[in-house]
Length: 57
Image 1: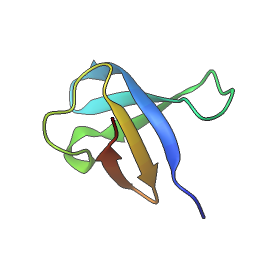
Image 2 (image 1 turned 90 degrees about the horizontal axis):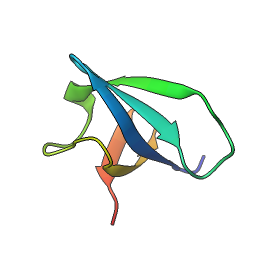
Image 3 (image 1 turned 135 degrees about the vertical axis):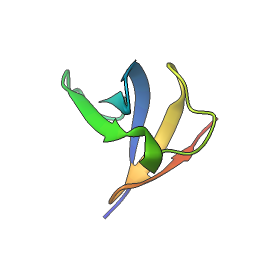
Image 4 (image 1 turned 60 degrees about the vertical axis):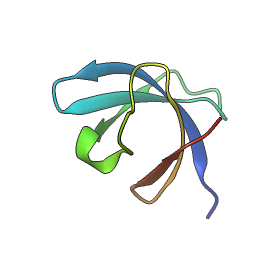
């Protein structure tokens, strides 16, 4: 299984709403902020797989 790429589109309380950027998927994917690396904000690009995320350039 390969990681997917996401961008944080919104932050709603304790959840970040992620959009996949490596596929044509219009849906937002909610993820608890506690599962994301520190210093994430709207616009942060992430690589993630199986609930583990890291910030990408």
